[in-house]
Length: 539
Image 1 (tube, one colour):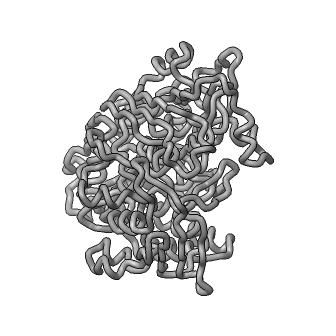
Image 2 (cartoon, one colour):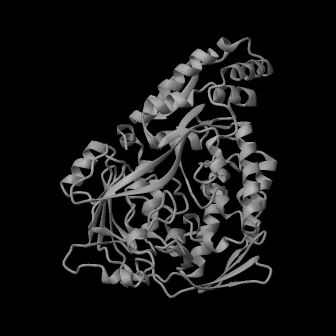
Image 3 (cartoon, helix red, strand yellow):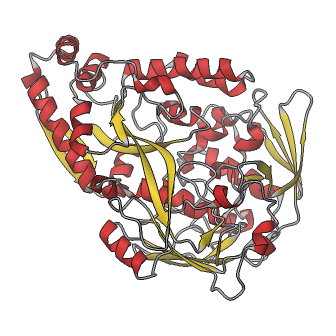
C-alpha cells in the first residue's frame, strides 16, 4: 500500500470501495441467512462515495464503472449473479432452451416497475432493440451481437424486424441466437440486457436524465435524488418483487474525488466504505480487507489519424517506453511492467509478455520504417503528438515520464492535454484525440471481456478504430467453443494479434486493496467494476 495508489482515478475507486466481507462471512451459507444477520436497531442508511458524476443512468448507455455501479442497484436483468457467484433467475422465473441451443424462451415473473407498472416482455424487447438501433449510438450494442440479426441492424445492413428477440405475449420473451452460446444465460445478466419501462420511454425519450420525474426502475432500489456533481440518493424500491430480501432503506452516494477528503469523511463516520489504501495504516477497530483487482494502465492510439494509422509507428512508440523505470519510481510492489493486453491474473504467462521492454534500438528501426511509409523526412517532420490524460496526479506522473522518453528516444515532440475524465472519455468515443492514457479493469473470469473492447472498429468502446478480421473470428469462435482449453487458446491467439498490431500500448499492471467498516455486510462483487447492494446491511 503506497501513496501513489491513493490517487488512482474513480474508475478503480468505485470498484474497490464497495468490496466487503461477503465471501468471508457468507461462504457456505444459504442466502436466507442474510436476514438473520441484520440488527433491527441500526439505521439501514449506507453512505458511500462514487468518486465522480456518473455519465448516465440509462442502462443501455452505461459503459463507465461509476454509471454501471449505480445502474446495477436500479435495474435487474433476466438473470443475476448471487452473492456466492452463481447465476440464477431474476426478472425471469423460468428459462427454456431449445435442443439446438439457439432459442431461449424466458418467462417473465410477476413484477412491477417502481411506479407500479407491470414488468412485461415488451420492456426487454424494446430495451434491447433500442441499444441496437444505430441512431441511439449505444457503445453496448456489440454485447447483443449474439442475437440473430442484431449485428446487421446495428450496422445499418438489416432491419429491426429481423432482430431475433420478440415478446410473444406479456410474459413470454423469445430470443434466437446466431450460434449456440454456452454462457448466454450468464450474459443476459449484464447491463446491456437490462429492461427499460417501454410505456414511459416511448412517450419520453429523456426519461433517464437527472431532471426527469419519470425515471422508473425494476431493481432493488429506486432513484430518489440526483444532484449534479454532488450526490445521488437511492431508496428501497417497495415495488420490487424480492423487496423482502432488501435490508437497506437508503443509499447516499457522494461524489468526492479527493482521497484525503474521503478519508476524513470516513473517520468522521460520514462514509461507511473507502477505496484505495491509506499508506499502510490500519484504522483502529476496523476491518482491513485485501482483494485482488486486476487493472491495467495503457495508451489508446487513434489509428484513424496519422501517424498512428501506421503499424510501425505504433510499435516504435510502444517499444520506446521504459516501463520498469516507471514502476520503480512508483515504489509500489503491487504494480509491474505490462507487455501484454490481458492481466497475468488471467493469463499467467503474460508476466513476460509479447515484446521486450525499453527496446530503443528496435523502436528506432520501426520509427524509420514507418516514417518512410508515411512519407515523412525524419521524426522532426512529424506534427506534435498530443497526449490526453486525466487531471489526477498518477496520470500526470506517468504521462510526463513517457513524454520525456518519447522525446529523447524517438526525437518526437509531445504535448500533454489535461482533461476532466468525462471530457476525455467523450473525446475517445468520438475519435477526437491522438493518444489517450486510460485505466481499465480486467475480469478474472472472462478474458474475452478485455479483448472484445477492440472489436468492431467504429464503436465507442473500441475507441482506437482498429479492426482485424482474423481477430474478430477468433473472438467469435471463443464464444461458442465449449472446451475450456481450446477456448483459451483462441483468446491467446487473438491477444497476440492485438498486441502485434499495437492499437493500444500497455504500460503497467496493478492491483488494489480496500478498507471498510466492520458494520457493513453482504456486499456482493459479481465482476470487477461491478457491485451489488441488494443484500447489503448495516449492523
